[in-house]
Length: 187
Image 1: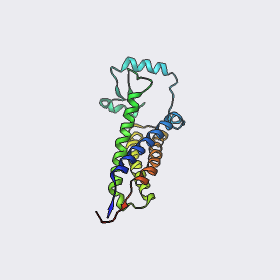
Image 2: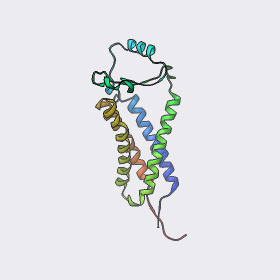
Image 3: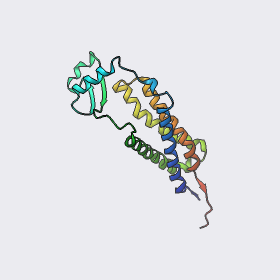
Image 4: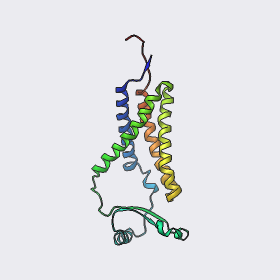
């Protein structure tokens, strides 16, 4: 009889989440990967003043707006998240939500890995399973930013790479912990 035990699965999900979170933190704060993809305005203070004068509230703004869609040929095209209030520099709430988001995603992948573990007997197959789910999620999330909103290819590529590397590292641990254990039929 084969069985996948629950406790190692829960531990694998938490450890996998921590690994992805740590990787994400490092890739945004220590390594210069994401900074390479950003552009700077020539006069950022002037841009801030124009936004403050024209944005009535925080939200997502698009130029041209959906109502003036005929103006897309002329350009420029702008899609921007505007938060007029600013944020607390320690970003505690944002960091906690980021970890919760990673935990939920990792739990979904872990649950699927546990369910499929009987057919994924080799360690490498289980790592690949986690990696493919992360890659699919990254593609579905990032490519529309490039296709529909014209985010740069470098920005989208870094977003995909960031997620794939994080979940590859998590997959190394999760695949080692979520596996089929052979048990005798004796109760």
